[in-house]
Length: 134
Image (cartoon, rainbow, N blue to C red):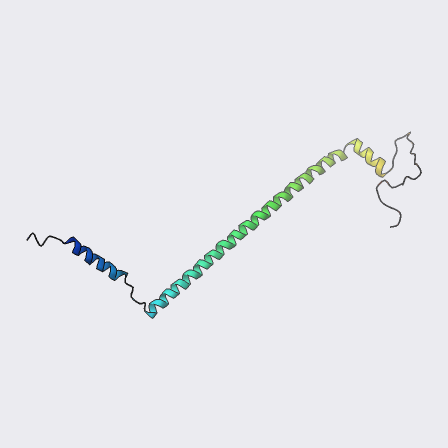
C-alpha cells in the first residue's frame, strides 16, 4: 500500500515537460482567426494614431500659447515703460519751466525786456523742417 503513494519525481517532471511542450506548440491559425487578429490590430493602430494626433495637437497648442504669452508679456513691459515715460512727460508739461521752454522754442516768444538777435546764416527753422523745396 505504501508503494502506491510513492511518486516518481523523474516521471512527474517528464509528464509536466511534455504538457508544456504541447502548450508551446502552435497550431496553425484558421483564416477566420487571422482575419480577427488583423481587425483587432487595425483598430488598435487607428486608436493609437488618433491618440497620438490628439496629444501632438494639444502639445502644439500649448507651446504656441506659451510663445504668444511671452510675446505679450514683452509687449506689456514696453507699454508700461511708455506709460511711465508719458506720465513723467505729463508732470513736466505742467511745470512752468517746460511751458517757458516750449514757448521760446516753438512760438519764439520772449520775456519783457529781452531782445532776439538773429545771426547771418542761421535759419529761422528751429523745428528741423527744410524749406529748400526738396
